[in-house]
Amino acid sequence: MSQNDKVSKTIMVFLKQLGINERIRYVGKPLVFLLASVPLVWIVLKAFNLGSSFGANPIEEMLDHFGNWGLRLLLITLCVTPLRHLIGKPWPLRFRRMLGLFAFFYVALHFTVYAWLDQGWSLIAIGEDIVKRPYITLGLLSVVILLALALTSPHAARRRLGKTWQKLHYLVYPAAILAVWHYWWQVKKDITEPLIYAAILTALLAFRAVKKWRKPPRRKRQTATV
Amino acid sequence: MKYSSSHIKPSEITSESVYWNRRRFVQAAIASGTLLTAGAACSRKVATADVGKDVDPNSMTPDLPNVVPSPYSTDAEPNSWRDITTYNNFYEFGLGKADPHKNVGDFHTDPWTVEVSGEADVTGKFALEDILKPHTYEERIYRLRCVEAWSMVVPWVGIQMSEVLKRFKPTSRAQFVEFRTLFDPEQMPGQRRAVLDWPYVEGLTIAEAMHPLTLFGVGLYGKEMPKQNGAPLRLVVPWKYGFKSIKSIVSIRFTETMPRNTWAVSAPREYGFYANVNPEVDHPRWSQARERPIGKGLFAEKIPTQMFNGYAEEVASLYDGLDLRKHF
Image 1 (tube, rainbow over the protein chains, first blue to last red):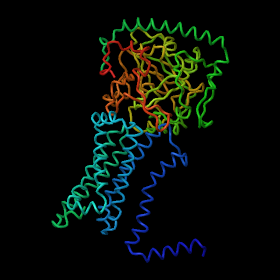
Image 2 (tube, helix red, strand yellow):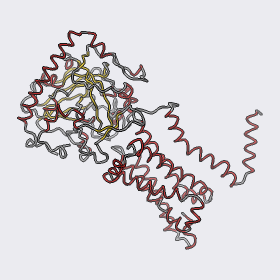
Image 3 (cartoon, rainbow over the protein chains, first blue to last red):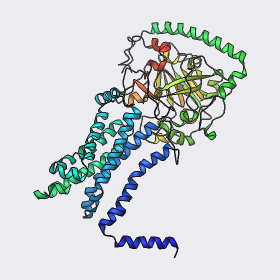
Image 4 (tube, each protein chain N blue to C red):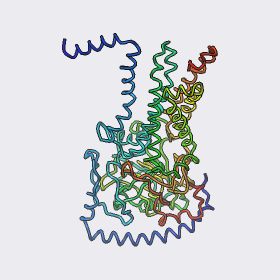
């Protein structure tokens, strides 16, 4: 048995001895963190011409990249609840906050690239965009909602807000709808990709609607099922 | 949007542009006279122009012979060969900007035939060489403004369209010229999806086509036109948004009525027939007041867009009396 095999066997044994809580904390969460960081790492490598490099219009590439990943992570975050119900285990919930914060992180980078590199922080140009162009208005609304959700994500905020917290965080649904809509309106000709996101979002929302309709929850547990 | 003759006074345009043509012709004659005496040194200077950093030598096309500089060139610094040949909208080869460069492998541009038809005395199918043969290849460094609010400077090699079109002897009924791109999904993988109404169609008024700034483009940087840039024959109209300059032309038709250009059919609210660069008329989804110059780095600011892309002095008279908000 080689040294490597010994090490991996030891790790396997160690993992088996860990409880589900430890496995999530020491293995699951770092792994999800690393995976969710890949889109950022990829852009950084590109900026240094490692692996691949930016094309003629790096600002456009960065806008698309961060926007796409913000939206994808938002949809992945919305998969947590259905997944939890489908497997009948609560552990996916433990990843939801991190996924949601990553979604906000990429959306914030998308917005920053727009406001800084694309518009040069020109409040006049940005203001004009918001007033004149509905897809920009939708995108900005989504950013504002996600910012509010991100700011109220710490446990302390959750405790302080009490029942208001849950009501506030239901706004993730309009935020996701606005984000998909924003993308749809922005696309010049081929709407395949926004259509895919719209379909996934519809399915995720439909799951929740059906769940609510089929099993009217007991009053006490209503907020916990989402 | 229908062409309405009441908006343009043809008599005015004609007289003005004839006057202007003549003025330019004299200038060009003087310039080319100077060039002839300068001889080969000049053309070599054009052909070996700096093509920018990071050039993949395999992406370079062969040199074109006897290219002479033109007095119509802007003195702006051209974008690199790499930027110009890897950042293209050419939906026949895919919707991404890098797709055309990747997907032109199966596209054959030699031999190439162009069909000339419609309101002209000389019509029929012509081998491309026969169309190009009598004309001088000029290098014309033009600004290029895309409707998506970015811009480049491109050292085109081309021949003045008016000189070519005159040889087909358009009749007095010819009010417009319609151009078509090849339709062949085998060679053009983007055409396998009905993203647009294939083949791509564009058109100009006869006055626009006869304007001395309007070119048939055949090359870049003194070299043959790369396929992703519209080889072997494309339109170059520097005062209009890029989509107007149709690539890989197989048909030239002189018509009495306004051609239905592909983008105007596909999204009439966003793209019109004229497609004149105009900072005062926004695209529904973005402002046209400013543009991002390609190749200036991450932190370069957008620059103000100029009326008719900076060619107003030369072309504004073509649109006298036309409401440019309506006829965008």
